[in-house]
Structure formats: C-alpha cells, structure tokens
Image (cartoon, rainbow, N blue to C red; front, top):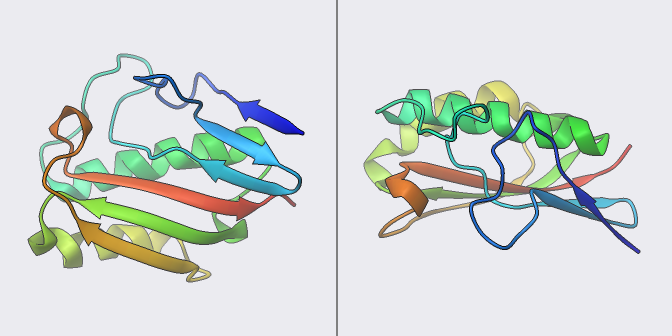
Length: 125
C-alpha cells in the first residue's frame, strides 16, 4: 500500500507529483529545490544558501514521514554546475553524517533555474 506524504513545512509540489511516497518501510522523496515553503519563492542566489534550503526542505519531508537524515540509504543530487561540487559537499556533509550511497550529476537546467536539487530514499524507523 502506498501512502502519500505531504507537509506544509516543505514546498508544495509544483507539478503532478507528491512530496514523497511511503511503500512498506521505504520512503521515496521527490526532488527538493530551494523554495521557501511559505512563499514558494527561491531562497538564496549561491550554491551554499540554496543547498541549505534544500536540506531544510528534505528535513521537513523526512520528519513528516517518520524518518531522519540518518535513515537515508541513497541520495541523488543534481547540480546546475559541477564547479559547485565542493561547496555543495560542505553543506551536504553537515546533514548526511552517515554517508549514504549517492549519485551526483550536473544537469543543464533545474526547475525554476535552481542551482541544486536533491532526492532521497530512506528507511522508515
């Protein structure tokens, strides 16, 4: 059975998708970009500020589902510019202290011209 996860503490979906889905004891989040959940506006103009907002948004979705950063088993990270890799990693490492499996790729364009988007798969505790 699938359970949709929705929280007002993370940005509402900007398309026909859910913030996250729980299937069994696994959580699959949609990609989070650096939108302020209250206003829907982009937060920050550099990779550090945007990555921090992405992590706040992921934290809200994880919390709503009963998971934590420590229960994340896989992340997929999308960067608009691989030159931001080191600065992104500095923010990422503060939140993902258990070092889950990860893919990180540069893409041509992200929604709303964000610099970063991150999705996760987590085990629900």
